[in-house]
Length: 239
Image 1 (cartoon, helix red, strand yellow):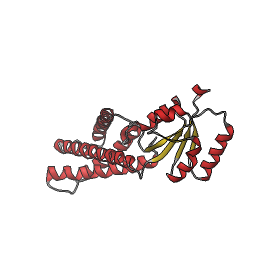
Image 2 (cartoon, helix red, strand yellow; image 1 turned 120 degrees about the vertical axis):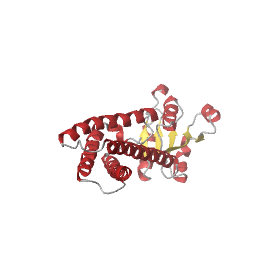
Image 3 (cartoon, one colour; image 1 turned 180 degrees about the vertical axis):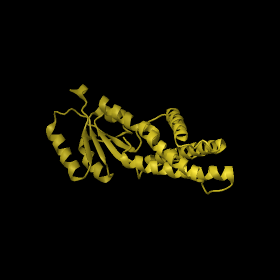
Image 4 (cartoon, one colour; image 1 turned 60 degrees about the vertical axis):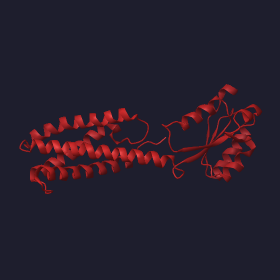
């Protein structure tokens, strides 16, 4: 799964500050017909950006653009962040004696900021979804075994909440599974290594019982030699 690290957050924060600066320019242009900010409005910009950075730290999901959150919940979090931001900023206006700023200018500022940040999140979300479904971003994986653990793992990776993986097939030695799921089964377990090399497999998930230590050691060594991510997800129901 894809989680945002500190680098992602810094990049998105820089993007937000840039969009806020652009929103301030647009607001000043609509209100006064000039792109040059007044001294008070410049101070307000610094406060606005600083408070947004503080609120973003508390509202952790402000920077989420992936598919883990439903769209409605994500939108609600954005609106909640703006509401908290407005409350804190109102106090700052009083403290720093910026009451003389035009109310219409403040309205324009919030409308343009919300619009630009909202559109940026939508564009980034769509770009991330598109890129995650492409072969360039997909991690090719296979599953050894076809028990309940294997099926559950495949369903999890195939869901919309887990983008970025491309399923390449199951490998099993059981005749009933070979016939029932012939379109998804790529061969016997003995065919796995050759298939991985021919299809540039990135990940192998082993869901068979763990009592065959020799076979597991063989696959582990093969994965290490070919830079393949190998993980054991044993199906204890088969023991």
